[in-house]
Image 1 (cartoon, rainbow, N blue to C red):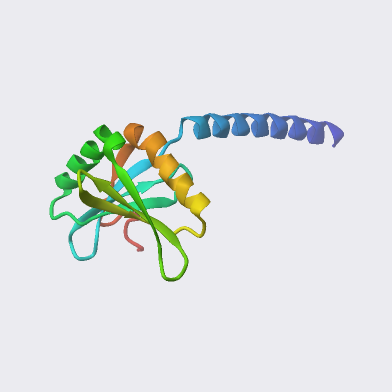
Image 2 (tube, rainbow, N blue to C red):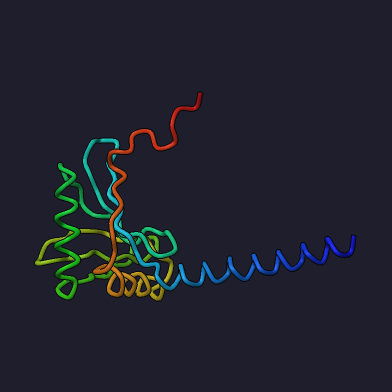
Length: 147
């Protein structure tokens, strides 16, 4: 009995170390992601999602999916020209509008503090130019039928 428990503890410890190392490496290489989706109305949008899976901003609507891809590429290549206009809502939440070449292209989620707002902006500046995009616009039945 003691031998089996001892082997279990060693295997559990090894698994924990390997698991921890995997997530450390994953968190180092992880960055934000652009996610393209289709609204119920049929128009397309994209979101920039943080490394932790939270939406940082949502784009304007597009009639065609490839327009989302084009704007993402334009945003990634001209990030240094972006302006982040900061606002405070009537409910006391903070948000920004992303302006590129004089046109508003996205609006952020609502943040409870100015510090969190700045962290969201920093994440865009740091990771957006390297971010990949995921296309969920054509995934009508992601989870399959319930039968």
